[in-house]
Amino acid sequence: MILHPTNKHLRNSFILLCFIYSIGQGQVGLRQYNRVENLRAVPREKFAFVVLGDRTGEGPDSWKVFDKAILEINQLRPDFVILIGDIIEGGTTNRTVIDARWDEAKQHLDSLGIPLFMVPGDNDICNEASCSAWKNIFGSTYSAFTYRDCRFILLNTEETHGTGEEGFGSRQMAFVEEELRRNDRARQFFFFFHQPVWISSGRFKSQWERIESILDGKPYSVFAGHFHVLASKIRKGHRHLFVGPTGGKMRLPRNPALGFFHHFTWVSVEGATSHVAFIEPGNIHSEKTAIDAYERYMLGRLLLKGKR
Image (cartoon, rainbow, N blue to C red):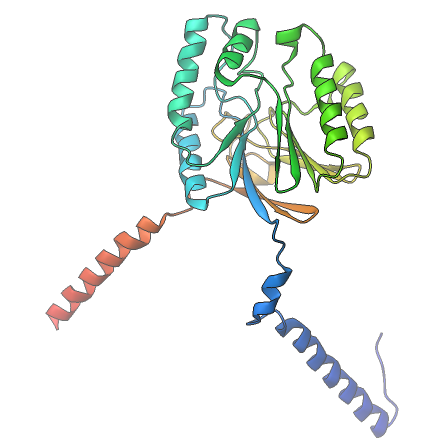
């Protein structure tokens, strides 16, 4: 609204009101600076975790990108990491080849200095032989845990190779329903599985709708992978995110605007909310960078002084 004061007194009053308002606004903004008591507003239950994306597709630099992400995650020190599936290539029933691929993967994963949780992808488990290999290495194909009053539920979208049932299978569905019943008061729920079942049809669709009905009114987020592209949708008021690749082959060249770029996903949890950010490997530097630079800088100063 534009005001046009008609006399000097109104005009002066209007200017004074604007001045008082601007001071008040400035005070509100300045309250966040240099005040220790503001730290009390930071939730004690605040924490962060990382989601690693697909590594498969036989891209030429897949392990190089993946290893760079691992190095940077070690520097950032989240509370834990969840790998969304597809760490090894599939397409074989030869157990010797499958075991060799897992041996290779573990050599890379062992450099991670953060607790790691994994869900199987459709390359990790693509037949009975690879399903058996997973169980031999990791035990169950699905699991759950609580961290700071939040419940993390890791599911297997490839369970049909172990049970012969469509979708999640009856046992896994019973597991999910029991998880939701027993942890009804969780601060937040976080779901992780490889294939984005909420856009599926058939058995997966009806099972996910059943899970959604139980979750009604509860705060939750959903993370999947599989498509090697970053994309997110708010479905029924909740985040449903396709995690993009961390080394996996993309169908199009790098184009962040279309979701095609290598990254890992940083999730910050605060109270009953969470926030996500996507970090492209290659631009995080360790403290060693500064230490090495300091030595070179000081040497340079000495050399310059010597010339004077």
